[in-house]
Image 1 (tube, one colour):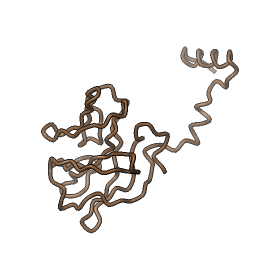
Image 2: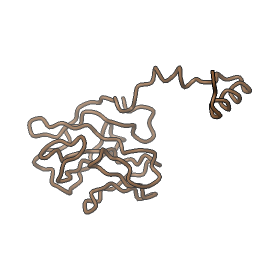
Image 3: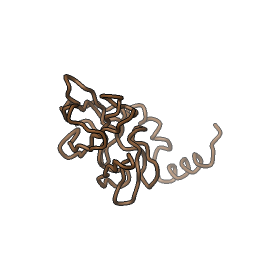
Length: 164
């Protein structure tokens, strides 16, 4: 077996302290990806009450998890409703967990702590900043004119899992 420099160092350090060299390989098969988390279904808002440019606050998947529902006025990845423009995201920045704000004039989420910025039309993708990844997107559906949250794609800041 040929080792690259990184693997050589891992094997050497692990062996020196008596740990298995590659525990991440064995553990990876048992880990459920954060993107697969299914949640309870909750009513978020009446679709008729969702206005372009406005952000509606709610909590999901539990009362300690602030989220924002926004109508972008144009199509968005994972969007529902007219023109697939209604999306929702965890409000907790993936950098340090500060609550992001929606800036409707720029159509983006911005963290006031360290200025990480996220694009809600592109699945919460980070545009700039120190965040570790995109904002977790709340999966939505529309039933009988009601926007409902059904799950989370991505891991909410400060959690090992989104499943309660």
